[in-house]
Length: 420
Image (cartoon, rainbow, N blue to C red):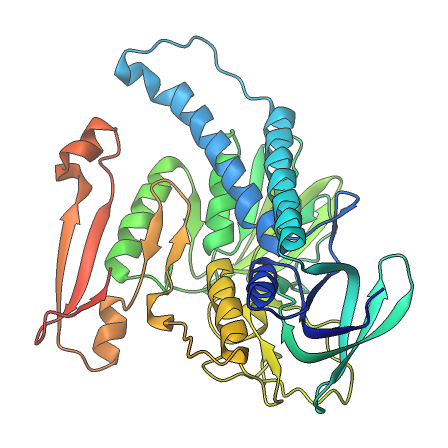
């Protein structure tokens, strides 16, 4: 086994494998360390490919096709008869897509000359010219690896909350919610964010009665208020019971059911569900990543402290993606990975953080980029806006997609586009 490289990436998710591939393309001898084992096999691709973006989109598409076939095709003069869903086949399709994509990433690493080291990587010393990494293989062997440059890309994991401890069967995180063998009759969801709304939509379409609890008083606070209001209206019309300003104070399994206690402005309420999904956000995954004394500075939130180019406080050590400030998005991590490598190579690469797109893949999809109207005003802009309802768009109506709103935010003085 090789024990010295120009550059080592710890983490094989979207940010990590993009960084590793770019490094190899630029002539660095490169290794990518990834510990993940998915369904019994070592796997690249991180959360996104294995238990996040990709499998959730597969289920969203399958469930949308089912609902459209059952409820919408008749309007087009298409008669289908009885429509049923085979959840096991739907899950098998999801798994096949994931397996194909993760195998593709492995092929890309190999094709570009990147060594994939299957196991744990721990930065032991990042202060010298040669960084020291302890590598613990999945088979148990330990090796010390030296590298001139290190990119930390270990990703994130779901946040756990003490009032609703996951058990993998009745109370689950986002990963568990991708594996239900059938649609629960009643499904509770803690968190009305991206993950909660997407997974809630999947199982609602497949027949579940879904209640979504949101502790914040405002729905989708990060989105534009007009867009959030329109989205809430449409999602509730579809059958999602979204309850804002509702705090879950306890969740426990009693006789095979989940009993959830909530606090709604001081009033205590109790409800019973077949399953409960906990999706209240994610945290940086730093377990075994940084040895004590390695020299890396962390923020108060446990993130790796970096500058605008993802450089840490140590020369030659960078950190990207969910480990650092900013939204926890795969496409952000990918851009940061490429930027970090190109910076190491001496180029002047820079991620434009003002143009990172946020998307919630409900139906209709909710997406925004740049500044919302309220954020632009807080930054001191004199704002003007324009909006268009899709109910007046011929193409949208022809597709049966006339619900939704497009809003543009601009600088009133210069007409510069600030947000969409």
